[in-house]
Length: 369
Ligand code: NAD
Ligand code: GLY
Image (cartoon, rainbow, N blue to C red):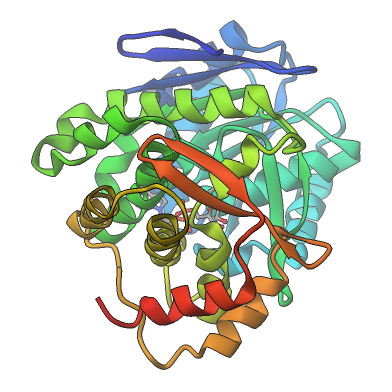
């Protein structure tokens, strides 16, 4: 189990087979970047790339550049366009080439500053640059603070599907500064609750009680992020490379969700919005095929709706488009679906009894409430 020291900041320490690292969750952390790197990692390089996107860079890169400069760390700032389309092999190559042109070498390190798109893309660049350099993740969205910055999954999309090219590359440090969440537009703030509700659904029923207090949630951001990081960290410690089935439970809602996200062309839905629809389908399948009660299912779906997440699918996305996209997903193994179901809130399992016919019926079920 990860060790947790509560407070501001809350410190969560992961112990993996080859990597131990710390996730710091608090406020006012950006200015402390250099100090925390010195205290919590073995990184001693004086040269770093800060990879960010066109929205986050202008807001937060200066604070990090200043903190690193103060510690005599030379930085180059690399900015990619905001949005999922930046998660491409072309963009990863471009980031690496900018790092080469700026004189970074295998002793340098990379700081990923942004949401899950930047974290996945820059983490992947760090994994392949000169066969791997250290990466510090500074996540700035709910999705990236509660989920994507922890666990080392990095990668890019291809026209064939999501996250199909990638590498495991654990960060050496994660700094989740909840103050950065104050500039997130409401839509992007809310989308993060799909992954939070997923965590509650698969591992921690009591987390749902905190989530349900939406009016006061912004007063509890450190607790909210830290509790989610603790859930994710425990699962990653149990099954770092997703080989035993435990980490695969984090895919709850993602089989159909990724199909919907890809079918929407990565521009129509935010990631969390597509996952919300995937969660609704998986919740209903859990009621139909497992022991999740209809009341528990309704409670989970109501919590998604509380955060204005979609629970109804428009008719113009055909089953065929979604099923085609979904069958290219990594969660299909040798054509077999490994589908995550709930037996109750807080407990999930992998089922091989869900057929393509069940998926189609579940997608149809999303078209009416
Ligand atoms: P994102 O990175 O695209 O961020 C959403 C939008 O918010 C972007 O326009 C971004 O510029 C903007 N933004 C980010 N931080 C901001 C801030 N503090 N203030 C104002 N605007 C800000 O999307 P996301 O939802 O963070 O991440 C989604 C991505 O994460 C997907 O590609 C998904 O596949 C990936 N993901 C990966 C994992 C993993 O384990 N690696 C887990 C979950 C999701
Ligand atoms: N987001 C799923 C995982 O990290 O395994």
